[in-house]
Image (cartoon, rainbow, N blue to C red; front, side, top):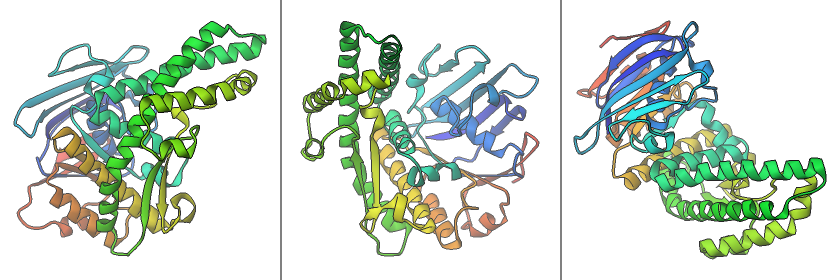
Length: 381
């Protein structure tokens, strides 16, 4: 798929921005705070219904305005036109319309325009807490599978209800056992389905990751990746368990930890607590990887995500790189840039200076350069 055009209205410091893109490479230059990243955010809103940065919807509305709107026109790999528009007004639900229908929910558009996004903030995937790695898995699987996207939302909804029941039980010293049992059953069913899909996903994803890391770095290093459920015994996940096996294991945990949950007033087990282990040379990357190794691991994860999504969707994802080249040394920059150009994917790159990227470009490539100044985007070549 490639993005033909993008329109932004009242998004951050962009009043009204309309741009048309190269189907191959687009380099967006601008000073920090000029609004270049906002163009990538607009693309993400059209593909994922939200920004890829940690923010709130109301903060994305331009000052003096009361809504933002992002819309895009794209073309699938089969040449089918695709249009999408997302509008948000403070205090209201998002209004989403696309080629597939009107009054859509976010889950209905996720994956229609598959995106691979890499930003300096994403280094927390290898550096940070399990929550960052779960979000990495969940977003990839949500783009690949609408069923997974729906179940992921269900888990959040059920968890909120169950936690409310446990919180009230803690406050009042008593609990309605029948209601708690109903929500516990729903929670176990959904957790088991999500854990089952994540386990299967890791087995599919690992070969992509190993190959991507080999291409990213010339150093001979051993890397591994595996799923680590927080609440389940290792012997369960080591034997390709069925959903029924996982439900039985979760039920045993629920019974064993019920007293603790009532005392604490919160759910203490489930798929929302799981992690993805990333290892390098026999150790946990969080603890043993160097700065350079963390960068290589992150790039490899994103390269593997690209290959996985391309095969899962049978559609070329669009690649968004937000100021990543300032984070990389010369060797990694050259490797990443070469792999980008060889992928065949439409690519968007933001940078504070484009001259070094210009020098790295091979002749004959279809590239568009843009300069963004105070929320105004101008095509300069």
